[in-house]
Length: 433
Ligand code: GDP
Ligand code: IMO
Ligand code: MG
Image 1: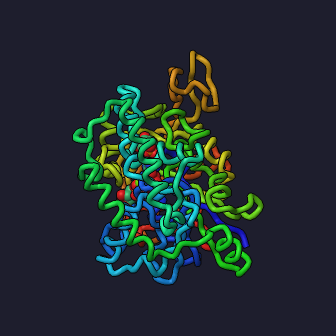
Image 2: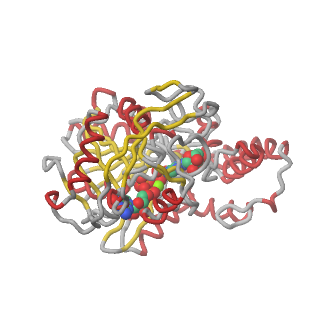
């Protein structure tokens, strides 16, 4: 067996959570491989909205095993809260959730470091979700981190204090003052207490060596789907650096974040929103600053699932999409939020960039400094509300033309179209998934 992968092809928030939930009946195991609680994956089931940050989006299916892999970084406070919220919804996460011992921990002081680093950057701030992502991955790579498997070790508190002291020395150099920073609405001391209480609760989790578990599951013919977080254009290597997150959000992250060999990667689903959004700072060539951009934000309810910030909106960028497909080896495309484009007279897609008067078909290295002008192709829009359609035959011709244009441009077919946030608002083009 091979492991299938589902990931975002833009700047995150493509609707990955919804599509994972829809595909979960086809899988035995859903697993996260990178990122942390900077992710916010929304599922709408029977009119109820659920936002998951760390727990894989298969958790609402009682017969599915959910695995948090070694490449994910875990804030015990947030994971514990997420488990509590699920309990209120009658989902017992302790039953169906396995977590890698090798996943690194986000300490309260990592959250403070994130905040002081962002503050120090001033105008050049990344627009981080401030969940401690950058500092925790830094400590992992710098070989200073603490892993989830350490929480049951009697030296855990010594390790914690050692790392905390190191962080406090850095914080002092930034003239940190405790009263300036709240974490999840709490003072540092209160947050630290709750963090330790959460660590105690998490001792009841099933902690595993997830690389062995995944390997054995593949041998046992279990079907596994790896759920990406963030998006390809936020990848630490290939995104618009430094306006990126601190993990490999691309398919390669599955290998390092789960311990899966490259030849065991199977189908790769690439999720693409029908237009583009971005939350936080950084380049966005097709961003719209006019009423069309506002209309996309209003129609698409484009406000962050993790921070509530308004998302920047713009037309679909096929140059960037083609790049994302190349990096991930996407074999199957999924279009989300197609319903949001209803009612536009014309719809634009970016097919080239113009940089210093020259037409180019790639993302330039100096994407921050270059004055990138998108070159658009215009297609006719459609009037009809498509959010309640139940069959592909009912889709307007103009919508089909939009999909065909994208498929021809990037050379990969659409297998699924999402026409609303609900599970049932999904049209399967490929019936053999
Ligand atoms: P993720 O991070 O990729 O899982 O995406 P988010 O959950 O952060 O953001 C996607 C938002 O769009 C959520 O509010 C979803 O409920 C919603 N959504 C997903 N698919 C569709 C769709 O096809 N149409 C509409 N209108 N909303 C959708
Ligand atoms: P999902 O999984 C959208 C963005 C932040 C910021 C940059 C770095 O829901 O698609 P970080 O917190 O990692 O230091 O932030 O990346 N970002 C996301 N944007 N969706 C996400 O996740 C994101 N996770 C991080 O806004 O610009
Ligand atoms: Mg999201």
